[in-house]
Length: 375
Image (cartoon, rainbow, N blue to C red; front, side, top):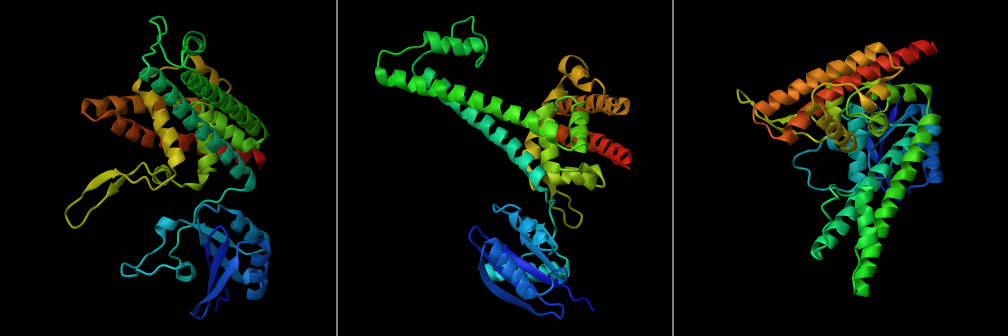
């Protein structure tokens, strides 16, 4: 008979509610402890040998610190997907103790789905990439505020300034836009300063990403370089995919990766009726965003030149062949959906989903080569 005891943990910023499922069927609460390493260590020591424990908790804002603490203590731990935890329809009472007990019971019965947990170095890269994404969003807001401020006061660029946010456009604002009232002039200076600050922030973060890529393991660098053979997948997009997904070889089929991204359609089918709705959006939102952005590149006819040709230099010919097939396949897909009257958002979503198949093929091939070379 197995002697493994299953530990369910309901984790919050300051506290952890714990319950244990015994091998003989009893599930009992252990109480609430502070969310501190010393308290976790005492709980593990009290429950017995670490190799006879298995712990789990839901993914959330506390991250993976508890996972790393428990594994360092010798306790196998899994972080589970909150949206896939079984819920009884009639259960309307929710407390930390009941949540921990439910996790312990479900974990023992094998009803929980674990998520991928990055190591500390991979988590650091992912936080850096997400910080750059946050900076881009802040830049968009800062530019929007400045542009609407100028519009409210009737300040429009001259005819020779064709595009917004070019160097010529910013020079026009700084040198030719002025107000008689000091309050408006102070407002303008603050908005302009914020736009400049966001540009400097993005430049600083992108330099940090370059340094992080150089210091990353050789296998990760190889995948980042190989993915850039695809049209629409430049360095930031490639590193975002690797940072969010990790090793793509952990997906046995590309359809699993598509499901992970949340770009697959939802379904409500019963009996003879089959109904499919919009995309599930149950996966990684950061991955989904960069894929949809990359998919816009396939509205143009297949072509290799300029920056794309430079990114492909020195890559495996087989990888470049996959990238070329992707251009033909996805461009054709884009044209067919457009001819059927689909709107552009639906088209790029479908193209982005199929793009994941080519990303999976390139990454798996590159990771396999790296493994063979290491062996």
